[in-house]
Length: 116
Length: 165
Image (spheres, rainbow over the protein chains, first blue to last red):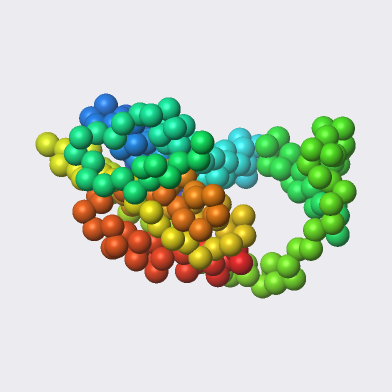
């Protein structure tokens, strides 16, 4: 019985690891393919979060409530908090540096509103 | 209730999570390290300031759980949207920056809504206006700005308002 349970845990852990790696590689493809810095941030912030979650969930399933598993949970929590903030800071810094939006950009209501 | 008390309650828990050992000894170690690290900077962290935590913090826990459920659902949706865009043979997007008025007033509510916007499909927070009433949101599909504003107000802000204010 214990052996079967370990097998199920292994399979679940491998599935979530594969999902995580799939989304992380999608994020990297998006980083290369999308046109400008703002669109690339879409790919890295969102996809990076779920990709990292997949990998960390795999560790948690594999390890359970051990020091490693608790650390993986903490890392997931910190990623959930900090990933959107870093995306926002990069976008704002890029806008203030004067990085132009790509030419297909259809509207910009932020233009001229930024603080000096 | 001083901010110092809240800080010293929170830091041992953080230490336990980071070190990985959730034990009484680990809690004490975290408290000692927290004091050593934070006390010299008590002015910087405004530890002597008296804060008034709202009494219904505990009562809002179900709302917070619902918010996290919505957040995780939206993260998965956002990933599928980005995956579709990235894997399509020709990238056909109409991005733009949209001004979105928000109703939240407290700092934690604004942080919550801004982070939620970034993690949800097709939107990324760029900046906030001086009077903290308008968020500037970069959308990957800005052909319908009013639709984006409506979806943020109805689908996301409602849960953030319930959970954090």
